[in-house]
Length: 235
Image (cartoon, rainbow, N blue to C red; front, side, top):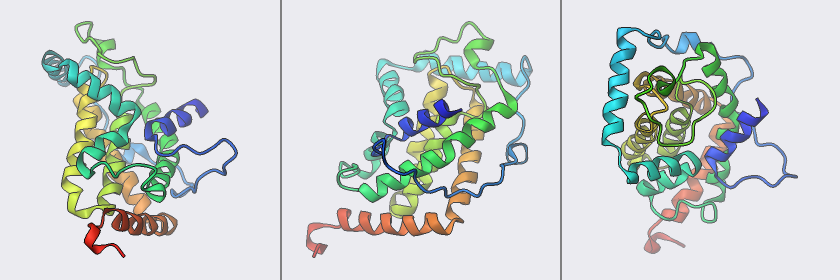
């Protein structure tokens, strides 16, 4: 499990802590999450619904391009780059250290719980169920439901939407595309991605109910307003 937590820290890639630094804050309450109450069961293996989902994966596989593959690979390792497409080149750890620390801490706080959700169903992946599915990226570890990177993308999109409310819709759309890319790459079903949006919203709302998270969010928002202010509005 420790390897999984470290993997999600890499996914965030938002100003990693030095080895001697103290752990970031824990925003989520300590009690376990009831994932079966949050998410419906995925379609059963071999069911008609799963066969329809396989056809969607195959359709997207036939449409993917080399540019799609490069984008999907980049999103899995430097997700922040995707959101910079919406917010611009100032979305960097150098310009926004408090913001990047916040999102890094969110990734650390939610990563293990996201992996725990996948253990509830232990769903096989599309390429394991149908040999026609040819993944275009390195095969991920763990099971398929829900799509973990898509969960994180949703959480980050919601958090960034709190910081940049005028860009909320665009950020959510970009986060959705990150999740859909996992389907296009052949490593997730459509219902994995749909469940990821639901679980991402669940974690985002739990974060927003945390006083310590909201305090750090306020600091990050002030930083973003200062850095993104037009030159004429800066002191």
